Image (cartoon, rainbow, N blue to C red; front, top):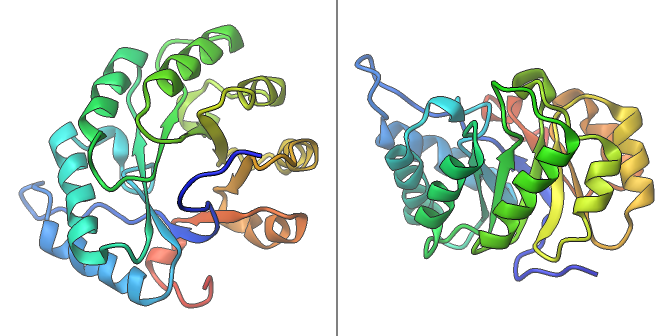
Length: 221
Protein backbone atom coordinates (compact mmCIF):
# COMPACT_ATOMS: atom_id res chain seq x y z
CA UNK A 1 0.00 0.00 0.00
CA UNK A 2 1.28 3.47 -0.92
CA UNK A 3 1.36 5.79 2.06
CA UNK A 4 2.12 9.49 2.48
CA UNK A 5 2.37 11.82 5.45
CA UNK A 6 -0.97 13.49 4.68
CA UNK A 7 -3.75 11.25 3.36
CA UNK A 8 -5.71 12.00 0.20
CA UNK A 9 -9.26 12.30 1.50
CA UNK A 10 -12.48 14.23 1.67
CA UNK A 11 -13.52 17.50 0.09
CA UNK A 12 -10.82 19.27 -1.91
CA UNK A 13 -12.04 22.46 -3.61
CA UNK A 14 -10.20 23.89 -6.60
CA UNK A 15 -10.00 27.61 -5.69
CA UNK A 16 -10.58 30.19 -8.38
CA UNK A 17 -7.72 32.52 -9.32
CA UNK A 18 -8.70 36.08 -8.43
CA UNK A 19 -7.64 38.86 -10.80
CA UNK A 20 -8.19 42.61 -10.72
CA UNK A 21 -9.35 44.75 -13.65
CA UNK A 22 -5.77 45.00 -14.90
CA UNK A 23 -5.46 41.21 -15.05
CA UNK A 24 -3.04 41.20 -12.11
CA UNK A 25 -3.38 38.39 -9.60
CA UNK A 26 -5.31 39.72 -6.59
CA UNK A 27 -3.61 37.87 -3.72
CA UNK A 28 -5.74 39.60 -1.07
CA UNK A 29 -8.93 38.47 -2.78
CA UNK A 30 -7.45 35.00 -3.24
CA UNK A 31 -6.57 34.88 0.47
CA UNK A 32 -10.18 35.70 1.40
CA UNK A 33 -11.43 32.88 -0.82
CA UNK A 34 -8.98 30.44 0.76
CA UNK A 35 -10.05 31.49 4.26
CA UNK A 36 -13.71 30.95 3.31
CA UNK A 37 -12.97 27.43 2.11
CA UNK A 38 -10.73 26.49 5.03
CA UNK A 39 -13.21 27.83 7.58
CA UNK A 40 -15.85 25.75 5.81
CA UNK A 41 -14.02 22.61 6.87
CA UNK A 42 -12.41 21.35 3.66
CA UNK A 43 -9.66 18.73 3.72
CA UNK A 44 -7.39 20.30 1.11
CA UNK A 45 -7.11 22.77 -1.76
CA UNK A 46 -6.32 21.89 -5.38
CA UNK A 47 -4.42 24.92 -6.65
CA UNK A 48 -4.05 26.36 -10.15
CA UNK A 49 -5.92 23.67 -12.04
CA UNK A 50 -8.66 24.11 -14.61
CA UNK A 51 -11.05 26.05 -12.37
CA UNK A 52 -8.20 28.45 -11.63
CA UNK A 53 -7.38 28.86 -15.35
CA UNK A 54 -4.06 27.21 -14.53
CA UNK A 55 -2.81 27.09 -18.11
CA UNK A 56 -2.72 30.91 -18.06
CA UNK A 57 -1.21 31.35 -14.60
CA UNK A 58 2.49 32.19 -14.65
CA UNK A 59 5.14 30.26 -12.76
CA UNK A 60 5.58 33.18 -10.35
CA UNK A 61 1.82 33.47 -9.77
CA UNK A 62 1.61 29.74 -9.09
CA UNK A 63 4.35 29.94 -6.47
CA UNK A 64 2.79 32.98 -4.80
CA UNK A 65 -0.60 31.22 -4.74
CA UNK A 66 1.00 28.34 -2.83
CA UNK A 67 2.69 30.79 -0.46
CA UNK A 68 -0.66 32.55 0.12
CA UNK A 69 -2.30 29.27 1.13
CA UNK A 70 0.64 28.51 3.44
CA UNK A 71 0.18 31.91 5.09
CA UNK A 72 -3.61 31.75 5.40
CA UNK A 73 -4.22 28.08 6.12
CA UNK A 74 -1.03 26.92 7.79
CA UNK A 75 -1.33 23.18 8.37
CA UNK A 76 -5.14 23.14 8.42
CA UNK A 77 -5.41 21.72 4.89
CA UNK A 78 -3.43 19.56 2.50
CA UNK A 79 -2.01 21.55 -0.41
CA UNK A 80 -2.19 20.06 -3.91
CA UNK A 81 -0.42 22.00 -6.67
CA UNK A 82 -1.41 21.55 -10.32
CA UNK A 83 0.96 22.18 -13.20
CA UNK A 84 -0.93 22.74 -16.45
CA UNK A 85 1.88 23.11 -18.96
CA UNK A 86 1.82 21.67 -22.47
CA UNK A 87 5.13 19.83 -22.36
CA UNK A 88 7.34 17.72 -20.14
CA UNK A 89 10.27 20.14 -19.91
CA UNK A 90 8.11 23.12 -18.89
CA UNK A 91 6.46 20.98 -16.24
CA UNK A 92 9.84 19.88 -14.89
CA UNK A 93 10.86 23.53 -14.46
CA UNK A 94 7.83 24.18 -12.27
CA UNK A 95 8.36 20.99 -10.29
CA UNK A 96 11.79 22.28 -9.26
CA UNK A 97 10.25 25.59 -8.23
CA UNK A 98 7.82 23.86 -5.86
CA UNK A 99 10.55 22.01 -3.97
CA UNK A 100 10.74 23.29 -0.41
CA UNK A 101 7.16 24.61 -0.29
CA UNK A 102 4.34 23.18 1.83
CA UNK A 103 2.86 21.34 -1.16
CA UNK A 104 2.04 17.73 -0.25
CA UNK A 105 1.09 16.52 -3.74
CA UNK A 106 1.70 17.67 -7.30
CA UNK A 107 -0.68 16.90 -10.17
CA UNK A 108 -0.08 17.45 -13.86
CA UNK A 109 -2.17 17.16 -17.00
CA UNK A 110 -1.10 15.15 -20.02
CA UNK A 111 0.87 16.92 -22.77
CA UNK A 112 -1.45 18.97 -24.95
CA UNK A 113 -1.70 20.90 -28.23
CA UNK A 114 0.19 18.14 -30.09
CA UNK A 115 -1.39 14.65 -30.29
CA UNK A 116 0.30 12.19 -27.95
CA UNK A 117 -0.11 8.41 -27.86
CA UNK A 118 -0.26 6.34 -24.68
CA UNK A 119 3.44 5.47 -24.85
CA UNK A 120 4.25 9.18 -24.92
CA UNK A 121 1.92 9.84 -22.00
CA UNK A 122 3.62 7.11 -19.96
CA UNK A 123 7.06 8.54 -20.72
CA UNK A 124 5.82 12.02 -19.74
CA UNK A 125 4.48 10.90 -16.38
CA UNK A 126 7.35 8.59 -15.49
CA UNK A 127 9.79 11.42 -16.16
CA UNK A 128 7.83 13.79 -13.94
CA UNK A 129 7.29 11.26 -11.16
CA UNK A 130 11.00 10.44 -11.13
CA UNK A 131 11.81 14.12 -10.51
CA UNK A 132 8.88 15.15 -8.30
CA UNK A 133 9.93 16.13 -4.76
CA UNK A 134 6.52 14.99 -3.44
CA UNK A 135 4.04 12.23 -4.34
CA UNK A 136 2.62 12.67 -7.82
CA UNK A 137 -0.94 12.57 -9.21
CA UNK A 138 -2.05 11.96 -12.78
CA UNK A 139 -4.67 14.40 -14.06
CA UNK A 140 -7.05 13.20 -16.77
CA UNK A 141 -9.05 15.97 -18.44
CA UNK A 142 -9.24 15.01 -22.14
CA UNK A 143 -11.90 17.59 -22.99
CA UNK A 144 -9.17 20.20 -22.45
CA UNK A 145 -5.95 18.40 -23.39
CA UNK A 146 -7.43 16.17 -26.17
CA UNK A 147 -5.01 13.47 -25.00
CA UNK A 148 -6.90 11.06 -22.71
CA UNK A 149 -5.21 8.72 -20.27
CA UNK A 150 -6.57 5.26 -21.02
CA UNK A 151 -7.36 2.90 -18.16
CA UNK A 152 -4.58 0.47 -19.06
CA UNK A 153 -2.11 3.37 -18.97
CA UNK A 154 -3.29 4.34 -15.49
CA UNK A 155 -2.91 0.75 -14.29
CA UNK A 156 0.63 0.60 -15.64
CA UNK A 157 1.63 3.98 -14.22
CA UNK A 158 0.22 3.04 -10.82
CA UNK A 159 3.21 0.68 -10.47
CA UNK A 160 5.54 3.69 -10.18
CA UNK A 161 6.40 4.19 -6.52
CA UNK A 162 5.88 7.98 -6.67
CA UNK A 163 2.56 7.96 -8.58
CA UNK A 164 -0.08 7.67 -5.88
CA UNK A 165 -3.36 8.56 -7.59
CA UNK A 166 -5.30 10.27 -10.33
CA UNK A 167 -7.70 13.17 -10.53
CA UNK A 168 -10.20 12.06 -13.16
CA UNK A 169 -12.19 14.93 -14.66
CA UNK A 170 -13.12 13.06 -17.83
CA UNK A 171 -16.71 12.40 -16.76
CA UNK A 172 -16.31 8.80 -17.94
CA UNK A 173 -17.86 7.05 -14.94
CA UNK A 174 -17.58 3.63 -16.56
CA UNK A 175 -13.82 3.98 -16.85
CA UNK A 176 -13.62 5.53 -13.39
CA UNK A 177 -15.54 2.62 -11.90
CA UNK A 178 -13.24 0.16 -13.63
CA UNK A 179 -10.26 1.91 -12.09
CA UNK A 180 -11.65 2.12 -8.55
CA UNK A 181 -12.64 -1.55 -8.55
CA UNK A 182 -9.33 -2.68 -10.08
CA UNK A 183 -6.86 -0.68 -7.99
CA UNK A 184 -7.52 -1.23 -4.30
CA UNK A 185 -3.92 -1.00 -3.13
CA UNK A 186 -3.99 2.58 -1.86
CA UNK A 187 -4.00 4.23 -5.29
CA UNK A 188 -6.30 7.27 -4.92
CA UNK A 189 -9.07 7.74 -7.47
CA UNK A 190 -10.13 11.38 -7.02
CA UNK A 191 -13.32 12.40 -8.77
CA UNK A 192 -13.02 15.73 -10.58
CA UNK A 193 -16.50 16.02 -12.11
CA UNK A 194 -18.91 17.68 -9.66
CA UNK A 195 -21.96 15.86 -11.02
CA UNK A 196 -20.36 12.50 -10.20
CA UNK A 197 -19.36 13.26 -6.61
CA UNK A 198 -22.10 11.34 -4.82
CA UNK A 199 -21.86 8.09 -6.84
CA UNK A 200 -18.06 8.26 -6.60
CA UNK A 201 -18.16 8.38 -2.81
CA UNK A 202 -20.70 5.54 -2.84
CA UNK A 203 -18.30 3.54 -4.98
CA UNK A 204 -15.46 4.07 -2.52
CA UNK A 205 -13.62 7.15 -3.80
CA UNK A 206 -11.39 8.69 -1.12
CA UNK A 207 -11.83 12.28 -2.28
CA UNK A 208 -13.46 14.67 -4.73
CA UNK A 209 -12.21 17.94 -6.21
CA UNK A 210 -14.96 20.50 -6.62
CA UNK A 211 -15.05 23.69 -8.65
CA UNK A 212 -18.64 24.57 -7.77
CA UNK A 213 -17.70 24.46 -4.09
CA UNK A 214 -16.12 27.89 -4.55
CA UNK A 215 -19.62 29.34 -4.50
CA UNK A 216 -21.00 27.39 -1.54
CA UNK A 217 -18.81 24.84 0.19
CA UNK A 218 -21.09 23.80 3.07
CA UNK A 219 -23.19 21.25 1.13
CA UNK A 220 -20.05 19.44 0.03
CA UNK A 221 -18.56 19.28 3.51
